[in-house]
Image (cartoon, rainbow, N blue to C red; front, side, top):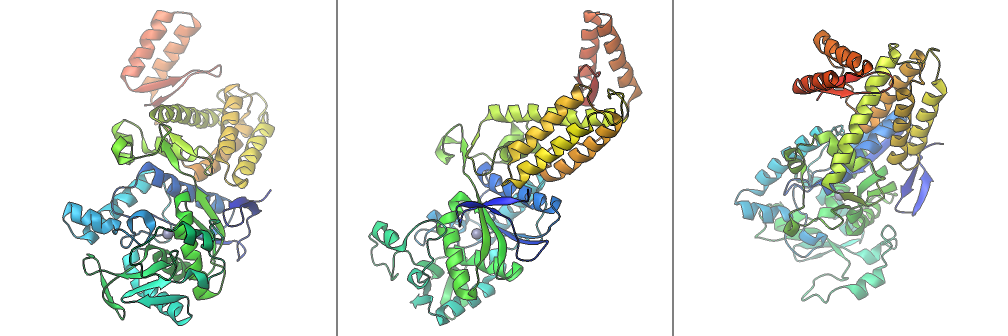
Length: 472
Ligand SMILES: [Zn+2]
């Protein structure tokens, strides 16, 4: 089976075929840097990372761009309200660019700690204002946009496919729209490409006026097309981006270029916390800082956020984090046991013994990932292999292949600790002494040795194939 992905645009799982053979152009909607990314945002960025890694593991060259929104993201994602960055800048009484830079740095540090592979580019909206104005001019010229005073709006009725991604219909949007006081828009669903506001802190001079700034949607079109060309293969985001953000991106991009903007639209589902919505009032808008403060390694959060299917809602609880930590210990153990078995320790006598189990695990992993990134299936392949190596079913050659497979799998998931413990003869001797005590059923002595090892920060893992240790 080749890679199939669920396309929000067609509402179907489709065979993945990029426009250019072997090359994928992918754009991921990134953070709006007015505050630190919360774990719900991080889920969407990690989904993009796993997707990119699986595409690379499948042999594609991936041109990946994730934007950083540092201006023009209006509260509520519509044209009314205030720019999130402006609000944060007023609250903290500093320049909005300073806010943006601070949180952009924080974002880069957070995703690096979570093992996210850096894309080719992390463009910032404020660096692409000219490209946005160029598109806006072209849209005006083609009759897809209109100017009211110093503002420019996109005319949704000029784009018949408006609503195709989200399933919204222009006439329903009209009926459902709030009765706006003094709206200058021709249609309630029209959206701002360029806004003017003398009170806005970040503003650019253009032929429309002195105090302009871009709409959020035009930013992504300008950065995506500017860096990846007019036709993308994959565009991702969180499910909250489908409407209006991505719907508007499609309308303005395709009206401008006359070409299909993105072939596959992929969206990660919402994250819930303790079964409910994340909210400031409940104090559960967790960030990576909350996770590490509670003593969890960032990779435990990575595992928690990728271990479910990205199109399934995910519930975050601290109990699930503890379960994830335990699961990761098992995967780490799988790796250590495979390494030992490949060296003959705890291995089955025939070198090729269990080779078919390794092959089946690899097959299952690939099938799972090819099936719209079904990470739960892929993980079950790893846990199945762990059972086999713990039962001593793998010979040395099979274990070596298993190790190579787990390395490849971890290149995609990036959750297993594959670092080799430094050999330590003293620890080995204590572990051996404890094993001897256990064999002699001298429980008092074996407990004493376990405690002594624990005091030195050594974690023991027992199995019929012997005891292995690692540093906590
Ligand atoms: Zn975007």
